[in-house]
Length: 247
Ligand code: 4GX
Image (tube, rainbow, N blue to C red; front, side, top):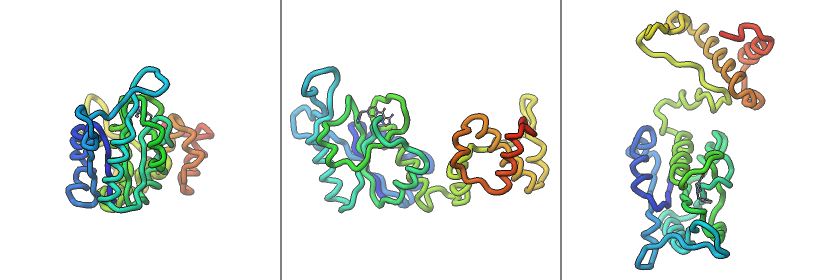
C-alpha cells in the first residue's frame, strides 16, 4: 500500500514516520510513504501557500494552485486510482472501522490542511474529509500521521504478530484488559495471582471479565456493537446483575 502526504511541514511528518511499527514497515518495503513539500509546487518568489480570504475576515486560506499541482504530480508518479483525503474537523470521524475500510485502498493521498482551511475548489479533487476527533489542532499533519498509523496496521505484515492485530481489543469492540510485567511486586502492589497461576483457561476468563468490566464502566455504548462470544455474553450478564462487579 502507498501513502502520499502533502504538507507545508515535511520535516515534522518525516521524523514521525521513522519511529516504531510504521518506521519498520517502511524500511521493509511493506508500505511506501512519500512526503511532499507543498512549497515546492509554488511559483512565486515568496513560495506562498496561503492568501487572504475573499469576503474578508480573520485568518488565511490555503491557495488552490500549489495543491492542484501537488496532486497532479502524485497522480502522474503513482498512476490512478488515488483516494484523496483531507484532514479536517468537518470530516468523517476516524474509527477502527473507518481505518479498516481505508486500508482496502491501494493508494491514499493525505492533504494536510493549515490555517482556516483550503480554498473550497480543492474539494473537486478530494474524495473524503477525515477528522481524528472533536478538538482544534493547528494543522492536519498530526491527523495525517494518525490516519497512516491506524490504516497501516491493517496491512498484512506491518504489525509483526497477526494474532495481536486480531485480538486487538478495539477490533473486537471492547476495551483492553490490564497488563503486567516483572517484577511480581512493586510499591506494595502485586500482580494478580491468576496471571501467575499458569491456568490458561482461568487467565482467559479473567481477561474477558476485566475487558467487559472496564467497557461497562467507561464506554458502555461500545457493548451495543461489540462482537461477544458465548462466554463473554455470560460474563456480561453476570456483571449487569451486579454480581462479581468489582473483580
Ligand atoms: N482532525 N485541524 C486542519 C485546517 C483545516 C480546516 C478545514 C481543512 C479544512 C483536525 C482534526 C483539526 C484544524 C486540522 C484545522 N483544514 N483535523 N486545520 N481535529 O482540528 O483532523
